[in-house]
Length: 123
Image (cartoon, rainbow, N blue to C red):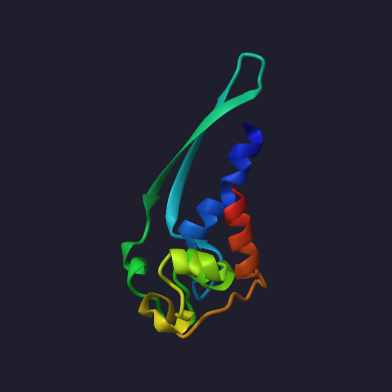
């Protein structure tokens, strides 16, 4: 169970974090994680509750910012078959306003979107 809980992090990061002017991995969601332990002290379960911090970020990014990481990770990391399955084949990141409106596609922290997508799929 401990491993499964820790493996959830790439999912939370991809769907809940974005690049801002000040921070490449800024959380757009608040997360409340409740851990459950046995009487012997072993971790036996957890719940994660999320809540949206900034609704405006769903539709608008300022210059130098990126939207949620998942958009970039899918476009950089998905295989041709996956892109076709998601109805994204034939498109580039620049084709989507939700991604291209700020003109910023990269991360300053050198995190690779393709590798992050691979980690997400492994979860």
